[in-house]
Length: 329
Ligand code: ASP
Image (cartoon, rainbow, N blue to C red; front, side, top):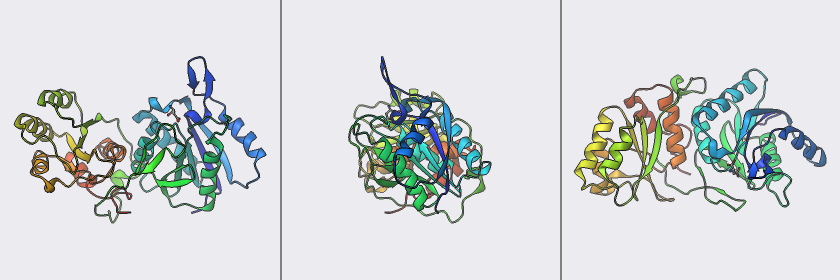
């Protein structure tokens, strides 16, 4: 759908940062700078309204509360102010996490949401800020499907499949070519659409490394964590000869903790049955995230557990394809 009135939601990030004694720092008042730059450019752009989430932050400080504030501002822009497209300006460090979280928090939203940011601040020499910002507006104006997208360095990407792969290059974000599988949900349950309020969730992600002990995992799982993304080896394997470690996982699952497995490999996906060392994890209660990224698995767990769903319902919905995060292609 084409957007004629865009909400520009500014959350902070390098794109609007200014120099300070301790380095680049988030700054308010970005709207004036965008309007001034637009008046110097020739392209025709859609109308837009600007909203700033206060205080603007370095996205290294991003939290679940910030995601919920974004959802509230986006809903207000659409439902009360009549906007038909949304552009979120965001720091790049956690942009992929927010794009994934919003993909699941905004399921069923009838208008498109595009996120962007930049590697260099607006106004800096050779900055990518204005091309990214005005390019994203143009994409919305030309027409993009409802759902959450990332526009960066000239590319439009699926919000629930991107990762930041470079801390310097302008094409910092990429869709990792992971194999995905999962049945597409025929109809979105009301319990997880964008109108559903969410509570904060105690969530974490942990990479398996040689030497991980049952005591490490016990300490983590005893901390009150409600969901854990376990970053397994290869096709979903782990230390299957450590009975104590498997017992720790089994006990956590039995008391309601959701345990999701992703692959550590950038081009990987979980298929527990390939190795006996994977089957053991599955029998301890882990569910497969297929080829989902860490960002997508965390965002999806937040949206499902935050909606207050029971463990088995979270596990059922986690295993389905909700917005293309598990689909091929
Ligand atoms: N640290 C900055 C942030 O994520 C980096 C950036 O925006 O590129 O807000």
